[in-house]
Image 1 (cartoon, rainbow over the protein chains, first blue to last red):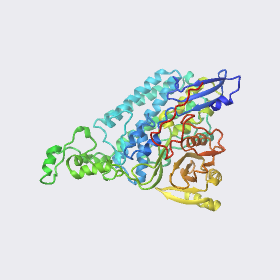
Image 2: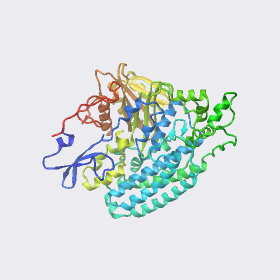
Image 3: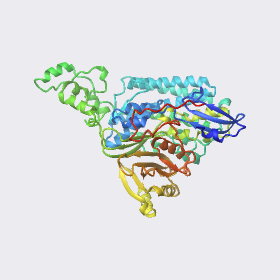
Image 4: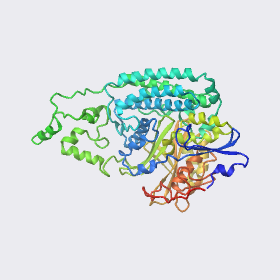
Length: 442
Length: 159
């Protein structure tokens, strides 16, 4: 079947295909252009190359089991996706994470936001020929990923933020690592400002290119840095604060013209604000409760043996692989309600009730079962308002789960943004929208 | 503006068109008559309510119930910082609803997605075709009677 543009194109003009696999399209998306020389007369954007049926899969997974799928939505900032999903379920269940976990969540989502923006700008600048910027950005991102990796155990597929809290406490050396990441990121941001802000090649491809007015941006449902680049003040963290964002001091940078350069600038300024948030959260975070193991702690096997005659009161030693699953950590990082969180491993490994609780948590029709109803909750993702809409029928798996992907709305405006421009403008414009295939196609 | 006042004003103006007003987990939900969707949404979009943004648009398949499908619209007002959820029920035999493309530009792609996944027809949509799936895909994947591991027929190579 001919596509829309094939039907509409005039006989004199040239049709050009960009993508789905194009060196300057980071992600699989197809842009069909109708050209008159270098000038774009008309265009059509085709998406769906990375469609994996996220929403269909989620209907067939339990609330606990579908968490890893959310990592794979916006794979540049997976922690924010975890957070959005988890907080939606928490809203249904009516529970709140412990305070320390809330601060950890904020730190983690701000780190993700920085890495999201760094990746976006790195790709955008590289496609304009500024390869140094790409290398610098990736260098800064590496320090951020170090912190994330040591805490969550993974770089991208973290599944770290859990219903009721987070999976494990921050690792012991996190303060030094985080401070280093902040210092290095600040240095890189300064370098990038120096490299790009007055760079003529970069300015020619970004200043006054793909200008989007406030009305257009709102009409397309834009949110996040792209909306703010047009001067509209809307940030989910300020409009409806979640976690502990209302206790932290930060600004929402705005642009003026809504062109590619403003989208770049807003992201740069937002990263500085994110660094500020992380610094404050580090200071304000409540200390963990003392968690040193008693000297007379038992091995699990000894505890089972001892429990045959009388109830074991002593602490139980666990393998270091199970860090974060100990009972004494739960107070700080995870709720203690058996209904919502995985039972502590001391119980699972040493008592019959514990193992029953464990199986009941994971067994079909026995795990987390939110009440009937529907809920929408959103967090500020790297690209904008990341919302989850969940319909629950009272069973242990969602009846319907829908992700409001910010990127979908932004990319739907791409046709209008490149209308009447040159081919070379497509690349930075596309870069500034920060298209993430996983989130766009779901 | 208070959300309660918005709901009250709506009830006054479109009395019998609004079937049900409910609150779930702190969110207001309006269940409306399908045919008055455009009027109600236009009313909300204008001043002084200024729900100027179509945040999200999706569909839910309640298989076994009548009417089977439910369209879900999330509106957002930037000036008031409030969200409002509007729902309309569609029966399987007459699976169509007015398109919102005349009011919001992002409705174009969102409605294409719902058409692709559920097969809902949108009246007045300029270019209604599949968005994620390819031409020649059989069925609508997010319907409840679409099996999780359903196979698709091979499509011939394009000449």
